Image (cartoon, rainbow, N blue to C red):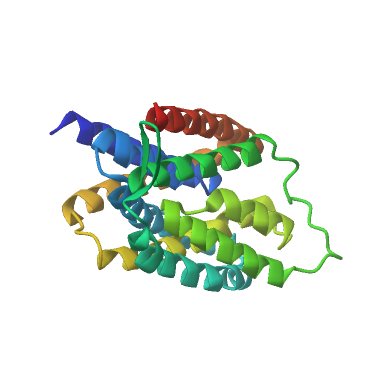
Length: 265
C-alpha cells in the first residue's frame, strides 16, 4: 500500500479520536490530510471531508442520544437553516467560484488557493476560540431563555462557512450552543455531533453531482475514523474537556499558520 495512504488512514484514526474527545475539529484535520498527505485537490478534499466527518459524527451522535446528551429541539432549530445554506453553497456557490480570483505580481490567487487560505483563516478563528475558552456552560442559568432567533442565524452562517471550506463547523457550533442555547458543555458536544453529521452529509449530497467519488477509498477512510471516535469517546472519560480544547486549539493554530505559509510561499 502507498505510504501516503497509510499515513492518511492513520490521520483518519486521529480525526475520529478528536471528534470523540471534543465534539469538533474533525474537518480541521481531515482537509489538510486529504490535501497534503493523500494529494487530493482542495475541492475534492472538502467534499470527502464532509462525508467522512458526517458519517463519523453520526455514529457519535447516536451513542450520545442513548446517553441523553443531545438536545434534539435545539439541534433542529440550529440545523434547518444550516442544512439549506450548506447544500446551496456546495451545489451552486463553490462550482461558480472563478478558477482565478486575481493576481498580484507573481502571486496568482486560484480557486484552490482561495479555499485553502480561507480554510486556514477559519482555523485561526477556531484556535483563538478554543485557546481563550472560558468556563463552559456546565452551570446552567435557569432564568435565561433560549435565544432561538440567534441560534437560527448562527446556523445559517455556519452552514455557508461549512459549504465553502468543507468543515463540520463544530468549533463554531459548540460556543453557540453554550452561549445562546445555554446548554451544559457535554450536552453541547453531543448536540454538535448530531448537527455536524446531518449538515455535513447534506452538503456532501450537493457535491455528488459535481465530483467523481472514489467510494472504496472514502469508505475505508470513514471506517477507520469511526473506530477513532469510539476510542475518543472512551478516552474523554479520563481527561478534562477544558484542557483538551485548549491543547487542540494550540494545535489548530500551528496547523493554520503552516497552511498559510505553504500556500503563499
